[in-house]
Length: 366
Length: 197
Image (cartoon, rainbow over all chains, first blue to last red; front, side):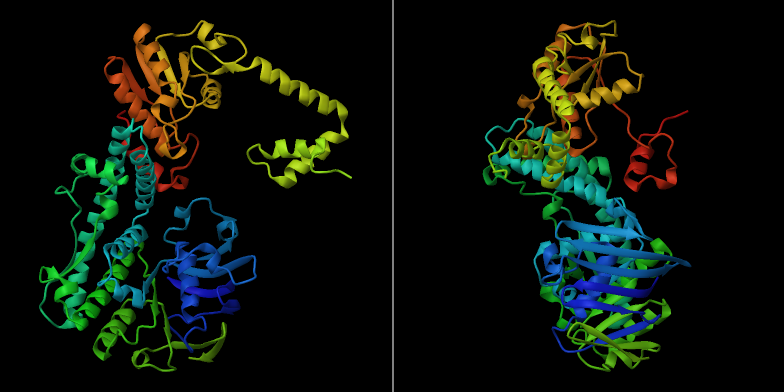
C-alpha cells in the first residue's frame, strides 16, 4: 500500500499543505509543537476515521475555520483510490473517488496504517482501558465483522445500564441475554485475533531481543473458559447473573468484555512488573511488527507505518531490526523526529526528507 | 413588520417541530403556503380531519378511521398475528401482498434509554388476544435494531407459556441486489440463516 499524494487543509495547526510522499521512507523533522504529529494523525484519520489520540471532533478543526479536510491518493494492489475526509462541527464525511460512503465499514481496508507512538510504549504501564482500546482497534483493522457486534454490544450495554439505574427493572432479563449474545461474538473475535497475533509476536521478539524469553499477549475474558460462541454466551449469562446484585447496587454492568484486560506476559509473568525497560520496548515493537504482518496476510498488501517520535524508544539494535523488517516487507513509512538525521536513518535508503515548521512543509530532498 | 407573536411566526414554529424540518425550511414552507389561500385552506381542513377521524384500532392499534379497522373486521386469516412496531410497518407489509393475517401494533420498542419499558407497549393486549383467540402463529416483525431485537426476545419469552407458534421475520440479502455490494454484517447474517434446498 502506498500513499502517493496527501493534501491537508485546516487540520489542527496545519492550514494548507500538500506533498507527494516518497515510496519508502519519509522523514518529517522540526521543533516540537509545529505540527509533525498532526500530520501523522491526519494520515491515520483518513484510513480509519477515528484518531489514535483521544480527541473530540471540534479540536481537529483549525481555530476559526468551519471545516478541516484530508485528501489522499492511495495505491493498493495496482488500484488507485482517492480518499477524502471532511470534518465539520456537525460530523465527518468520507468520499472515495468522489462518491460519499454511508457506512464506516465501506472505508475498511482502503488505507491501513499501523501507528507506533510513545503512547503505545506507555500501554504496558497504563490501565486496562488503554490496552482494551488498543485491542478493539487492532481487531477491527483486520476483521470487518468486529465493528458490528462491538457497536451492538455498546448500545445494549447502554440500554441495560439505564435500566439498572431505574426503579422499574422489567425486561432486564432480555437485555442481559442480548448483551451476552453480542458479548460472545466480541469475545470470540478478540480471542481469534490474539491467537493469530501471538505466533507472530513470539517470532519477532526472539529476533529483536536475541533472548529466549517466551513472550505473549493473553486475553482471558472474565468468567469465560470456552472459545465457542454459543458456550461463551451461556458463560456470559451466568457471569451477568452472578453480578446482578452488585450491578443493581452500582447502577451499571460491573463485569463483561467491556471490563476485560489484555495481558502482556514475559515467561508467563506480567511484563509491567517483571520486564526491564528494554524488554518492554522490544515487546511493544514486536507487537507492532506482528500487527503489520497480520494486516499484510489479510489484505495481501502491507500497511503504512506511522512512527511518531520514537528516537528514545529505539536504540541502535532495535532500530536495525526494524529497518530490516520494513525493507524486507516493502513498507511505506512516515517518521517524525526533532533532528535532521537521526540514527534511525543511517540504514534507510530512499528517504524523502521534509521540514515541518509552523504548520508548513518544505521538501528538502532525498 | 412581523413580530415574534405573529400568526406567521407561530406557523413557522409549529412546522419546525416536524421531523427533518429546520428554521429555513419552515420559513420557506410558510411563505409558500401564504402565496395560495386555497392550499392553506385545504391543508388546514385536512389537518383537522385527520385529528378528528384517525385513531388507533381498539383491537390491533393500527391507525384507522373505522373501529375495528378494515383488517380486523375484514375477511382475513385470523389464526396468524404479525407483531410490528408502528403503523408505517403495517403499510410496508401490506404493500408486499404476501400476508393475509392480522396485525398487532406495539406502538414502539423496548428502549430504557428513551424510557420505554414493556409496560409502555401494547404487549398486555397482545397476550390477551393470543390467549383468547384461536391462534396458530405469531410472526414477530419488529425492526432489526438493537431495540427491535430485544423486543422480539421479550415477546418470545412472554409468549412461550401460551404454547402458540412464534416465528421471526427472516433477514439477509435484499432482493435484486448483488452479493458483492452487500455489507459484511448482512452477508454474515444471511450465511447463518441459510436454507437447505
